[in-house]
Image (cartoon, helix red, strand yellow):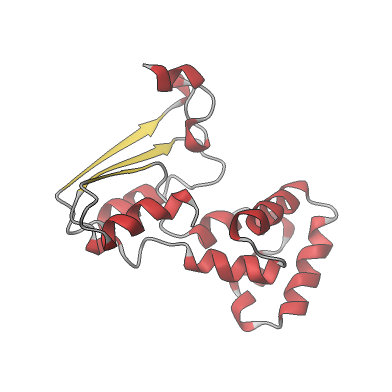
Amino acid sequence: MPACCADIRAAAREPRVSRVIAMDICTSLFVAATKGFTVSGLSVIAANSDQMPAPLVNAAVASVRKTDMLTDWVIAQGERVTGSATPAEVFAAWREYRTDDISSLVTQDVLLMAGSKDHYMPLSMLPDQLMALTAAHSVSARVFTEAESAQNHCQIGNMGLGKL
């Protein structure tokens, strides 16, 4: 499972976890990964991919991948990370990677971290995740900014920040 969801999901099911540091605020990997598809027109295909024949989904994605480098990268990364062989399988896998369905079971102390300009995880998921952690012992959030050169995904940009 991608790290963006594993920490919250593990804490919800494992009482031996005493504290959680969520290095991303992913309430839904499907939403995060497909948010940029509006430019290529794939947003409708992605949103309805669970109700469409896989060959149709795969053909539509293949067509866009030929001319849209970002979509090509997102799908290739999705295939690599989820072990999927086709875009339809990637979309199905992404739907499983979520925390909004389990966050209410987390009872530990939680630290949520996010980049203010993350290209992958929308900052709008931070309040969603904060509100979903209804049983957590405590919840803190940290948004990294451009002033720290740590505004990007997983705070890539200021390598020295981690050495402090």
